[in-house]
Image (cartoon, rainbow, N blue to C red; front, side, top):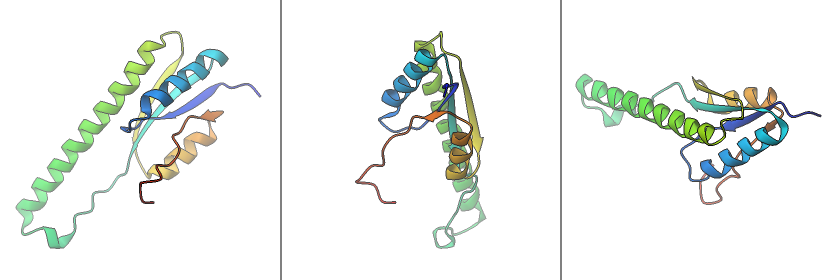
Amino acid sequence: MAIKRVLLPVSGDGSFELRSDMAFHIGEKFSAQVLGLFVQAPGLVIPSFDVTGMEDVSVIVEAARQSRREAAVRAQSKFKASAERFPHVESIYRSITDDVETSFVRHARLADISVIAPPDPLEDG
């Protein structure tokens, strides 16, 4: 089977650079495209007991929106930096808002190989 697309989930964890280098090396070896995918969950849940008024809600919502925008910019910047180290490897970047697990599964089914990190044994879930 020929490898034509490598899925690289873009994240803020410490293993991203290692996974990114691995994905781009695979892309280089097999002349495959590297797809960087950043996914954010769509919703923001605000527990009612933390809110004293509508002004508080708008402040919380705006802070969450700003944080999400910053995370998306950081992710794109990380992927772009990786792609620049491998200019001869075709790469594309996608940033979407959707269910995280479903999105990765959907994109992984369309890729020939996915470069993911093993689960952190110290992290719950």
